Length: 383
Image 1 (cartoon, rainbow, N blue to C red):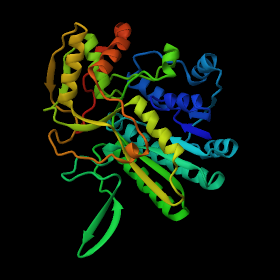
Image 2 (cartoon, helix red, strand yellow):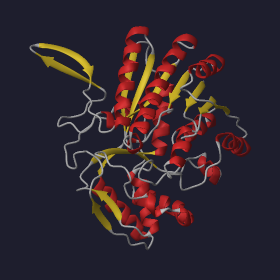
Image 3 (spheres, rainbow, N blue to C red):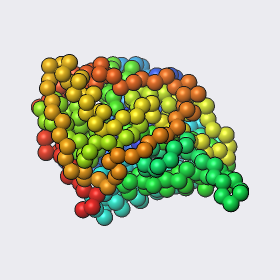
Image 4 (cartoon, one colour):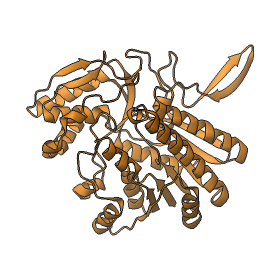
């Protein structure tokens, strides 16, 4: 099918594009390098150098013989996005085109304003471009498990049935995000649900947990095809940060007591999930929600697993608790359901010591590029 990937230069967008193209889909990528620009402005560039999007596409074509269409364009510009949707006529749009960092959104007014305007504006533009030019197109939006927060009840898969004063109805699960970035994702879902109800759009919202991994079938063809690997406090995930701290000989910094529990998944499982969503589209008038993760860990669990993997390579690393820069519960109940994608055929990859060992070996050659001052928290939720 014709697949339009918005945010195609990102950590998820680029490997998604290669994976879909390798399965004979016609792929068009759109990006305006927003993440690269704000990463540079905050001194948070990726550890492993990555070519620009046009060069990546040329390297991929040289390795595989498969051509990717690339558009360097800002999805916040409706005229540009509308023209791309009209001309490419996609059957599926995969929406990654948002400012993806919770810490960035909490730096100050300018960063919060950019996050709010970009994330909601791009989602709004996608909706209207589809309404005007491709009304049967299936929108696949990357949501986040962070929308739910950490409630003291089980987290259902997007929807919950409520009984109140003897009457029942079904609603979007109540959400209580912990950052402005996560709040924009909540608002995305509400915006899409309005237009699904009103215009019978087809939408799948993937509530994804933190993703780890570098290796995919296509990325392994050439080191220059690897996805972006951020390790800093603003764009890096806790797994990436711990791996780089291990290589740099810095104690693994656990925020607070380390009982924060989240659902994680391997990059290859993200690719599986998005493909399953695309090849099993939602019905017109349906907002389908999947909780997209395969395993749950506390931060302490992750630190212990990374420490064991490092020991296997002859690297000894300490674990150190530091004051938590975020406003969040550090110990809490966390029981989200996540059966939908398994039922569609997801075959999970799990976070084993071998997986972490392989990632450590990928990171080791870039040890000299590690900037130690980017690892400790530079953003605090309370200012």
